[in-house]
Length: 242
Image (cartoon, rainbow, N blue to C red; front, side, top):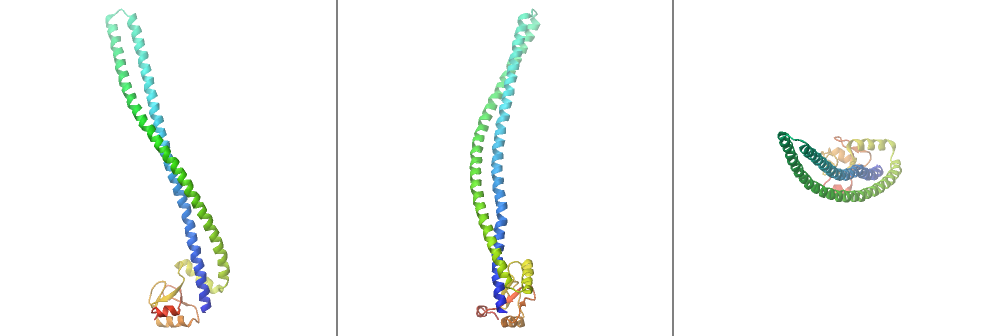
């Protein structure tokens, strides 16, 4: 029976390694997506900065059109002044011309503000462009490393799984099925030692009879509390096994 325990311990060690590699592989996908999301975020910031510049430039062009419109109105009013002989009409046209000139001054003030805002926005585009390029380069490098790790883990996993088949074949079907059921329900600690007269898995105190039966190694003994498979060795006895 000691031979079966030894085979189960070897199988358990292999399953633990498989579990570790599987967990590492499971983390790579989310890590890769996080990196890509970071790169997309910096690119979105760049696009937002560019959009801001375009919007400001569009506003400035609109103001320029308004100035041209006002100038055209001034020219029209001036021509009308030359044609009128009525003093009241002349004064009214003069008032309209002054109003247009005042409007032009206000519009030009707005243009100056927009030019200043555009300059700031263009600097933001330059900064965001550098950040986006740096982020893209970094992400490509890190994803490359992740892809390399993933390939290595997949290779390791294939080798571990292939070896497991051979190891598992050395355990009788009944015992192997029991082991695999416990592994699914309890995790990687299936075959556990007795530590200070307690189960190495759930740490509950074991009956003296259970420890005696386990020492005899004449049958598969399980913990009455958690169902894990128990084993006992001399080094445990020296550590205070009973």
